[in-house]
Length: 117
Image: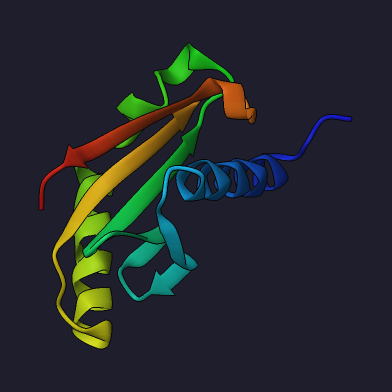
């Protein structure tokens, strides 16, 4: 059965959360929304808060999963993260990306510090 785009995205986020948890990160929030945008996963890596963008691209016709995290998307993530930190307390943080070309744990690429704020 083929997953809808939304279901495939949710499945990719679940896989990413499990993948990161298996590597010692702890889930803080999933699909955090505010007026600036959405962050797929917020994880804790020791004392560092990690804002994670999960990208699934099953077709590279319009570019890779990594290329889809444009400067505009990065800016929205940064504003959303700043808002989260204002609401929940300032913390050391970083931005990671989980990239997949199919919703499968064997096809996960983890980019730590994918971009800077």
